Image (cartoon, rainbow, N blue to C red):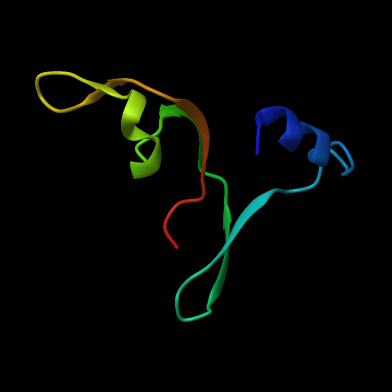
Length: 74
């Protein structure tokens, strides 16, 4: 999903509604967490690592940028 696709979907809701992140763990328990932060990161997903550059300490310095919505611990 792109940022524009997310904005388009959110436009159908009352802008004063609360937003949460929903996930289901391997035991089928479902969690709904509040969003802790939204930030830009460089992806570290294995299938997208071809374009990643690393520094001397092994930190990612460039690659595919994504927006991450952090829902905290589940």
